[in-house]
Length: 49
Image 1 (cartoon, rainbow, N blue to C red):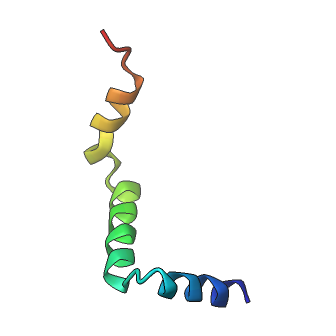
Image 2 (spheres, rainbow, N blue to C red):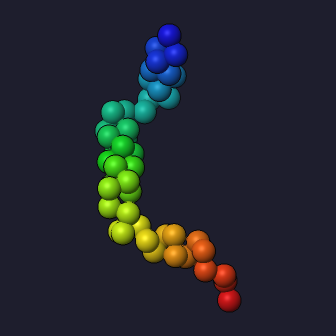
């Protein structure tokens, strides 16, 4: 039931499958290739000058 409501909500927002494929791809890359995203973590933890 919840997935049906979610699907209808996504269709009403006109968000296509290509958008979700891109989001999922970025998420998978972030999970499996965390060293590529170290600069984000490093910048977030460094105190600003």
